[in-house]
Length: 115
Image (cartoon, rainbow, N blue to C red):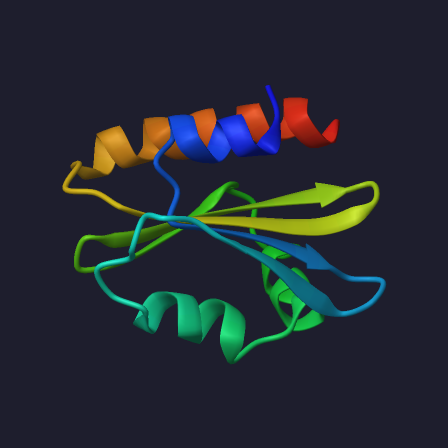
């Protein structure tokens, strides 16, 4: 599966790769609109890959999930090389369905990026 296929199949509105070496985010925008941009702004635009990495490296339970209304984010990390991946999407799923989706996203990203 390619990244483009992953984004389309999972109806991802925004996909972000955090490059720690350059301390920058690479953002892929899609035709899907987020219902609310606040979560994206808080987690990505008002942050840095290095500060997010510091937070995520202390988390035992991965991937991490955030929600603001029906806008949600699944965030995964790769240790070698150190990268962060965030998938923003809209969903009305319950917590259990979101957790299963987050695990699916993490698994698919591991295949795509080989981490």
